Length: 245
Ligand code: CTP
Ligand code: MG
Image 1 (cartoon, helix red, strand yellow):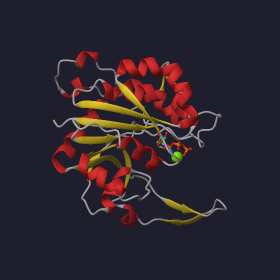
Image 2: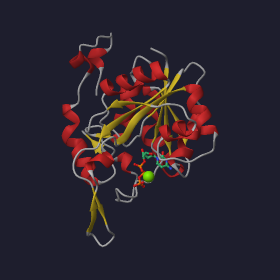
Image 3: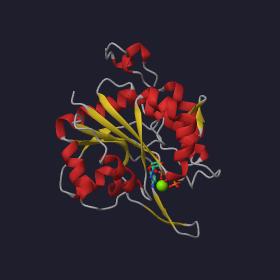
């Protein structure tokens, strides 16, 4: 497998979560969500660098309370920007020469399993660009601001619709070129797509939820003990028994 640098943007404000502080500090099993997220990558055999992107507002607290832990894990800190795109762009400048692939994974997705990360790493190693995503199920309705249904979308219209997740993983030169465009997007793949490079989709899992609201946090806490571990797939490597997912 190619060597991977992982960028973990956590520099938002968590406004929709509420509560007056960044949601990334919320705990799952006694551990702040962003630390849990980082640990999936820092102990990974293919990962040569893990960069946590932290807001200017949270930087002092993160350094004081978690600086030692981050150092021990081998994660480095970069200051974020006003948008997710800016935050990732800041970290891109710090990616080490050794990395061949760059993975971007939201700090707010603490339930990622190494099994799913490995699947998208492997696809990106083959194609140069891949992301996890979930097909949309159910019956979709467009709802007016008044709260009344405008229309039910015909099934045929969303037959091929998928919701993007992270990790999103790219060959280093492809992602750097995509970000050099100066464009803004809500995920990394959109910038790569805009260059005309094909982006492969790997089927994700609904447990890899992005924590946006307190209800999402409740869901994350409920599923965290059910996540697949690499040994469930029969994958073997020397550190397997140390893995915490
Ligand atoms: N993020 C970031 N820099 C920003 C905005 C977002 O690094 N300027 C990160 C968030 O910390 C999060 C991920 O991007 O891990 C996905 O963003 P989102 O879920 O929207 O988080 P927030 O922007 O913090 O939440 P909200 O939009 O509700 O304020
Ligand atoms: Mg946001």
